[in-house]
Image (cartoon, helix red, strand yellow):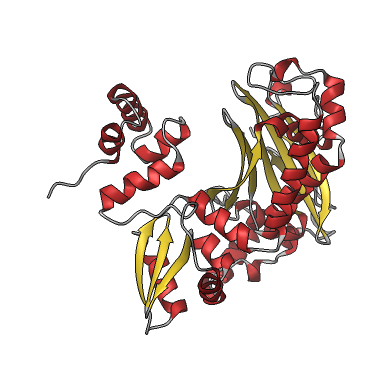
Length: 389
């Protein structure tokens, strides 16, 4: 039997036209196939995440579950989650939802992930057989949020409160076409309201707790998504109503000392905060788009510069060789890797090791992520002809 393609399934379902599929395939070809066609269609909002999961179930010949419409046995669910902890479910993007005898049914964003399956089997025990089904990631997040009494439940309550407050403000309505016309004084007033301040703090707190390297606040047509990059992978953790987008973005821009009146050009700034007793820098970048400003916040843990080479995960042999290299009087060392892999942590740990009063150390950086006492750190500035050369 010939394998069916996700794009063809979407056309057959009537979710997209064949012309839209061809456009998405052309975009995928331009990316050298690095992005799945389902992700492209979802990012263009031609299909929903739930439709993507349903289409994948057809492609993979697996069941599809819609957790939002299912009636689940809460007692059984809680028992299963005592074994497969919610934090593990979030990381593996999988959740147990039903048990029949010694068989447990697991809803997974990617049921073909054999490593995730192996970990689930090990945690559930040898006597348990698992059956997998596809599910939309938002269903997993929503289910875990509903049964949790932690920060996510508080967040849902906070958003409800903010939406009720927004509804009471008859003179403040934000639509896609009207966003750019909101008066700056109104934006500042909205961003200074306690619920918006609490929301921004809650987003930052969750990102730090989950050891995220980046926070993305992504505007869509009818909503605003909050995504975190953990271990190099972006995942959506929260949906903010479109009506609150302008206030949330303005609040973060105020914290970063950016111009909230200028929403047509990219801006960069910094926020310095103590979170859970540790100092953090948040490097904030804004990018204007047709659906509103996108915010990216790079999270820099100042304490990570004091990790020490012995705690970076090197083997003993590799660490000894590396220490010989960094103490050499000449040469070059290249450190490469994806976002969040630890490049900056490694480099600043090296600088901390070498930083003694007997040495004069000058760095050229773009940007200067961490400020270390005793060093001369230079910010590259091509406009002033101050470059790495």
